Image (cartoon, rainbow, N blue to C red; front, side):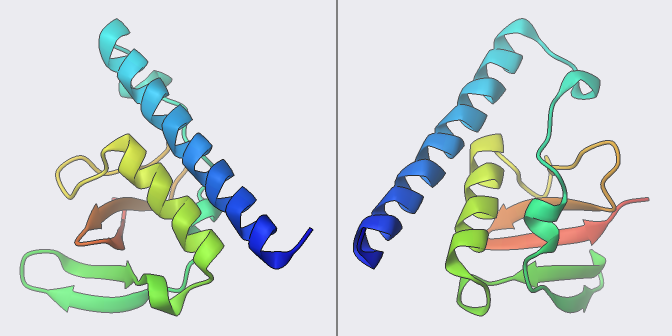
Length: 115
């Protein structure tokens, strides 16, 4: 296989994964699954990204991962999961054992320490 073919396959599988996550979220809404029953991906999916630290008056300490500063496949994988989950600053994505919560804003991945 050529590099171009592999790249197309990776994009395809990322799209399938995002569609599955989105489908799971939609089913959970219909059957009213609580957050306790929600399945999340391992936090390593996000922790492998390169984050830059920021501080603001409202959010205090938080971190941001930009696409151009990360391996494209890793960033796209994380981005697609958050997008399919509808992760926003008001509806953050995290699992029960996560250290950080994650969300999207302006095509960037944000995270902030829980607790």
